[in-house]
Each structure stands twice: as structure tokens, then as C-alpha cells.
Length: 99
Figure (cartoon, one colour):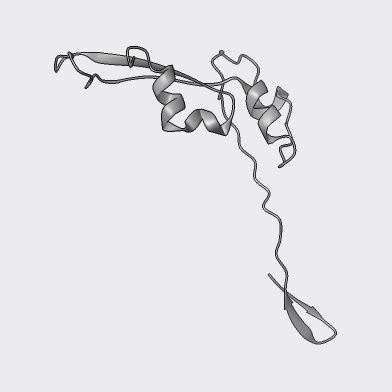
């Protein structure tokens, strides 16, 4: 954003503000969106907010591991408590049947 001060134009960088709304946990949320409490997230509390949010992903993928047939599916249930849980090693540890 450009801002004029004493006839001079200066570039001012504005902070990023974002609102994210969604059901990210492994629980069924029964309250309506307007009843839910907003959570402020910043660089100091990001890890704690992720850990408390109980973020989870549940899905199935075609099983391509050794010994699988073409019709086999692999159930995947990922529990996300930090950004490190998105790493390939962490995902592999959480996938059932990957050992």
C-alpha cells in the first residue's frame, strides 16, 4: 500500500489478517458458527493452538504397499498436532499397515 507523507510516497507493508472457519477436529461440532469462540493465532501461540485444535484427517487411499492387491484400500487416520506432523516420515508413521 502506498502512503503519502509530507508529499513523499512511501510503501507500507500491512500485516496479513485472515479468518478461517471450519470443522478441523475429529469431533462432531453441534454449535452454530455464530456461537463458536474465535481463536486468535500468532507466531507465538501457533503450536499450542494446533495442538489444542485436535485436527484430524480420515480418508482411504488405494493400497500400493508390497503384498497388496489392486482392490485393497488403506484407511488413513492422521492426527495433526504440529506442522511437523505433515512431514513424510510423520505421515508414514501414522498410516496403518505401513510398517
